[in-house]
Length: 246
Image (cartoon, rainbow, N blue to C red; front, side, top):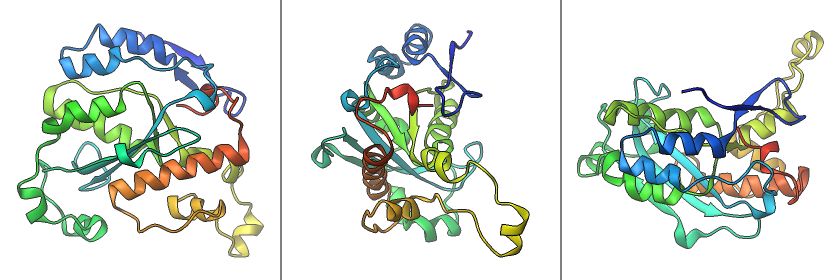
């Protein structure tokens, strides 16, 4: 199936993103799994929808490692929001049982232990409520290759069908501002380092409070707040979603 594309807005004219509403219609007619079909049938906002009218959901995953082809998901956190309000009452958090063993290194990072995952459900056991929480919303992440990459790869391993959806990547928005040009030779010789675009450091630049990292629900909340701050400082509620999504 040919993936329809449209040029990126002026920020990144060299990049292209799918025509997401059309892509969702195609996928709704192509997938076999009923849960994925319902997700795609929920549709997606048009590219010219102002940010002030977009329903968002911040998503964060904790994983057994960084490679989607080798590692698995151990927890999911999501928080629905818009530019005016973060809906903590509707937030969701799941600890999952990975099909790949927990490594000591990952346990140290996310704090999820073998005993916690032993009785936890598999990803497919929560797939329906997860997709229902994402349906019709624009997913917001901090580093899209984890959330979008892992969900796609893990679902392909589990049931032979992956998933596609547009994202707003708050890390990519910081990179547009702070990684436009690489550091010059003189700056490197003087010991200058690139500006950090990690979640905690990005939040600090906008005056947002520090949260303990590597808990899926807390990181999802932190990402939602970061996007609200980025839009308030650098964009406008009238900016079309196509200026941000990927």
